[in-house]
Image (cartoon, rainbow over all chains, first blue to last red; front, side):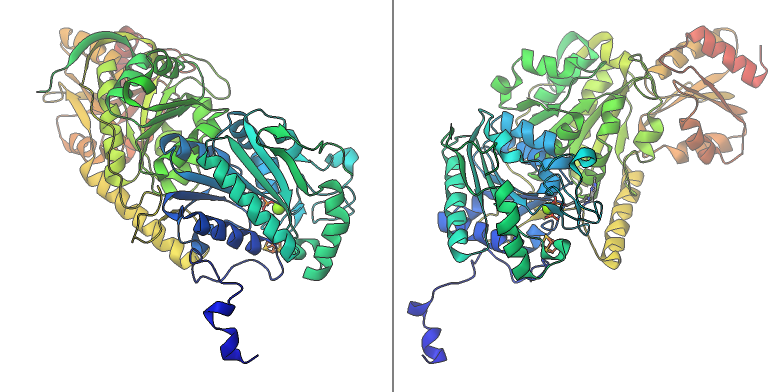
Length: 264
Length: 359
Ligand SMILES: Cc1ncc(C[n+]2csc(CCOP(=O)(O)OP(=O)(O)O)c2C)c(N)n1
Ligand code: SF4
Ligand SMILES: [Mg+2]
């Protein structure tokens, strides 16, 4: 095929969402963050809700969301995204509000805010990037860091006797009656990205239909923090992270559909 | 003048009623003595049914202040109230709000510290309020009421100033003001906002650029400019928003400087001292930031004035600002009670005589 033929509109297979700005990502090459960020933009564009959406980016590698999106974004303090989302949603109940939180943000410093927003059934979407590490600050132990996994603050591997166990937080949140949808995805293959996109759409539709809190977890990589190449990181993720954090729906339309407490 | 409704009200209840009438869109808070009645009143009188105002009990003050940050980012009128330990917990959020230049109203019905301290009135949060509290170079517009009426009036004033400067306003009250009952003239209901500022992140309007709220800047060169802009705003506030009250200062040889509830007690002490033939006046800063520097300086430069006495419910905090204003021109003494203790007018009068060797 000639180049000119490939770029014909009818042959188009993928196009950057118009809700993405020109600003290049600050993510490391191979990182899952960028794929999740642009998938959210695609869903918002396809739903045609970009004039009614407010995103919240707390501190973490995704703190600069407002540089990337062509819709309103509020940067939040580390851990406080769900409180900020609540504050926005309560005065603007007809708007779509979503948070984009790392595992340190959601499951350590912001556990209380997350748990209570979910418990109140705040009608928001929580996107949760579980990469088992503190990416932004250079690879420290996160609550989700796997047993034995090495980080700069557990250089000999996470010792659960002194450092606690990996916190599998979404199944806990799924128990709360205010939460209507909990699902876990990944972005390491095109097929998985498509599934994530569908899940994000469901989450935003839940918000439109005032069903309560929707949580979309993405088990992701941090090749820089893990000290691996992007390819190694994805392989390591499939082999290790997915065992502790298996993919799939946990709660749909307010009903628990899978017992996620026991790692398979 | 607008029609005002007279009522006998407790300070905390008056805060809540004034907030509803000022057309607030949301109150986010967490219970703490001696201000808990604020949220109780909002719930009891069903503020939401009256105006559509959102009232939410957060899981902590950390959460409450970040809810305020969220609500304020959308250009709505949002507030919280708390007391000293709760305000400490809010410090990070307050710094973010100041850094992101969001308007909101904060109220500290302060109590004695440090630590869990006491639930009785104190002014020991003066430094925390006007000198920082949270991290970074920022300023809170700070209003210090000395009556339930002022407390009530400062609620609409506080949020309007906050919007004028895109800056948080703090009302520094104390446990006495929150708990005592006084006659208040309540303003009529004003409507909630129907339009929001251009900067507000409440969904990008069609045909407009997206908005964002942040306090982050990785480049120091850019961030210095942000700080310079903030400082320019603070200088503007210092020029326009100084508030104070003078009582019998015209012929005074000695001046008591006191704010908030203790200024009322000082006034009584002055009345007694005047009966005994002593020319004492009261200078009451109403805005603690901006502090009435020039006005105190002018008094210090007046040859008639022989000295100052700072009277505070603390170990002496505002006295540092008085001394900065006086610049050594006249002696500045201090009298205070701490830990929730409130002096009688007699105690203040005695301290005055002792300080200035008069009888
Ligand atoms: C109050 C506070 N404490 C600590 C930090 C430093 N900090 C910034 S991001 C971060 C961890 C981010 O990890 P995570 O939430 O997992 O996001 P990731 O970068 O991995 O996507 C920390 C500890 C901060 N910004 N604020
Ligand atoms: S540090 Fe890790 S999480 Fe952050 S951008 Fe790089 S790879 Fe992604
Ligand atoms: Mg992380």
